[in-house]
Length: 185
Image (tube, rainbow, N blue to C red; front, top):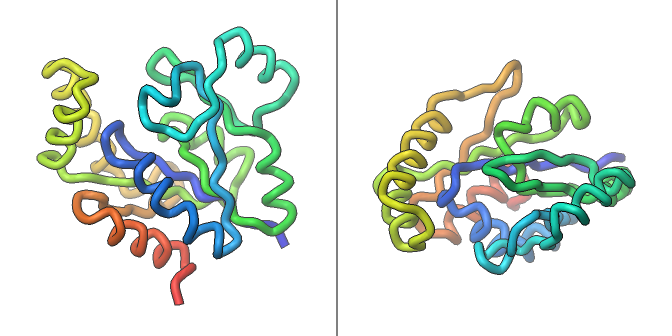
């Protein structure tokens, strides 16, 4: 029996990386593997558990077919290693940190994927973005406007988006994620 692909999305600052790290062990005990993305920036600089590569290395890997999914966003390249396909075939659920802009293409390859949108209230998002200090005030406001777009749609195409609020306690969000995926009990 094939596993399920859990496609986590959310605006910058919503806490995707924090959620993934906090949920990693509970997911593992429930036969779910969290896949590390390959990315063309310093993963350590953003707190993401990712594999950093140069653009040249990324293109070499893409050319060899090393990625099940890949996309470009905000001037960076992202790739999901193709080994996740074997984990899915072996019956493992797989969680990836995806891109909302790439969801349609991901659904073409994985029609049964489970899209999960991590949401956060504007005031919480503003505070998180200001605290991390990577964006100017103008950039923070632009991210807040994009967050409003994330919040607007309940579906993309025919796919119902599962929403998960991360405005409060992180461990409550982990519990809600496990429940949403029917892992609790």
